[in-house]
Amino acid sequence: MNSVQQCFASLRNRAECALIPFITAGDPDLETTAQALQLLDRHGADLIELGVPYSDPLADGPVIQAAATRALQRGTRLDDVLEMLAQVTPHLKAPIILFTYYNPILHRGLETFCQQIAQAGVKGLVVPDLPLEESAEVIQVATGYGIEVVLLVAPTTPKDRISAIAEQSQGFIYLVSVTGVTGMRTEIQSRAKDLLTQIRDFTDKPIGVGFGISDPEQATQVKNWGADAVIVGSAFVKRLADGTPAQGLEAIADFCSRLKSAIR
Image 1 (cartoon, rainbow, N blue to C red):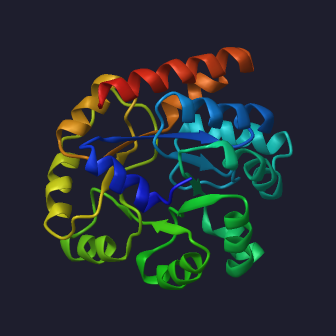
Image 2 (cartoon, one colour; image 1 turned 180 degrees about the vertical axis):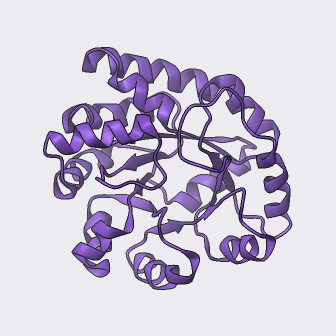
Image 3 (tube, rainbow, N blue to C red; image 1 turned 30 degrees about the horizontal axis):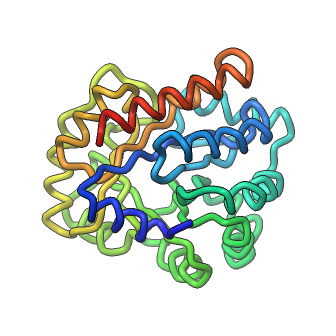
């Protein structure tokens, strides 16, 4: 498994846009999550974002909140997620980016947390409630374990702050396309196109656009705006949760293939 940076470098050499699906660990169960990661890897995912279920999310919309609640009710814990990942990551080409809020990191201790997720094969880390001003220590420790910390830019982020985030973010820059939480939307705000241009003024690092992308047409639109990656979460989480686990797995495999075809 390559690093996040290496993955984007390879895609850029091929002039190819990355697809980054998001799923919630433990919904409906960790066995299904393990199968889902392998299916996504085989059906077009270039990187995969895996959410650690958390009881008090700030950025997650209703679909992902519900998935996290179901996972927690089934008893899914971080140790369980990492144990599952340790078994699965050796069989994946797509780097795993862990999505977690800061409280689980604080509870475990930053050094221990980074060491443990690295041992499980995690290559990237997104912490949505980690402000730029407090990211330096996390980046320093994570880098020591070969983990790249991806920072977020929002539609409300001022230009001087965009510049600072672009400088510090590793692997790629995560551009949030809407003001608000995750979730499927009927159209992507054109503000994301303007923000892509603004970020390009400060850096040549890859930019991934997420929050609100729910179908192949929107994925194509975001790619045509100049994004280096399309990040899709709620639409995958919803499909995986509908019907039986087998039906959910079949649905996300098909959806992943269609999304990747739309951005080739």
